[in-house]
Amino acid sequence: MKLSDIRCERLSKQDSLAAAKLLSLDADTGPDLLKVLEEEPELFIAAYVEETLIALVQMEAPAPQSYLNVFVAPQHRRQGIGRALIQAAETQLQAGGTRKVSTSVRSGVSSSLAFARSLGYAPYYSLIYMERTGSAFPQETASARLYRDEDFVDAHSLYATAFHEMRVRVGCFPDSVVAEPNEGRRNAWAANAHERLVYELDGEVVAYSHIHRNEISSVSVRSDLQGRGIGRTFVKYLCNEIYRRGYTSVTLSCVVGNEAIHLYNSLEFQESHRMEYMIKSPDNSEHSRSGPSLPASLQ
Image (tube, rainbow, N blue to C red):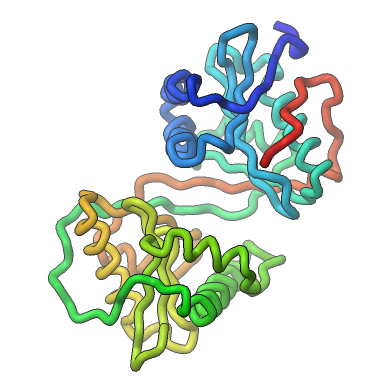
């Protein structure tokens, strides 16, 4: 097969089932991409030879730091296809202003780690994915409620500060800064306010969380109030809320080195797997000029 035979197009709805079947061929890396495919199919570019789907490219829109991942059908691997697609994607991201690109592989999949390293990606940080399948916690008094737009300033401030301080403690994020609030983020939070919750103490918002389906996507407690049991009470409340919404399990992820892992262990969360995130600066590497081109628009 010649690389020039590959045709790349944004994944269409009619090919979503074929994409899911393709991902199901790999038990190591397929499940993680399948979850993204179900929730954000617009992030995928499909690679075809004639009418056969042979690979998928997951790629965010260009930003100072963007994320990409490539999945090639097992029977088409070791032919340079994955390398060419990644290099084409990096080139396009760089043209759009991206200066750092990250990707991820499952821990323990040595071939995937070696492949990422061969393309210039270096270790960034690791995430532990955890799941709780037990029953709901006994009902406790918790001053938690759904997020409202007027909570934005306080909730965003404690969220941004807590995550920055966690990253500093872990030591894998040398460029971490406290994220500044903006109108775009405020509007995004308002658009799915039913997935966001806050915890109050003496009438003040002191903790914030975002839940998505059965996942606790983020949870943070105001820095000066950490260590007082607020996080434990809030996480238990969040689990019960997810159960109340009809789910039978709760999932979350924790950065390796984050002390919150002790809280999650004590609440009966079990590790399911780990992901290794890797990063590179594409403007410091050479890119393939002969590989397939990707669609010009990522919007």
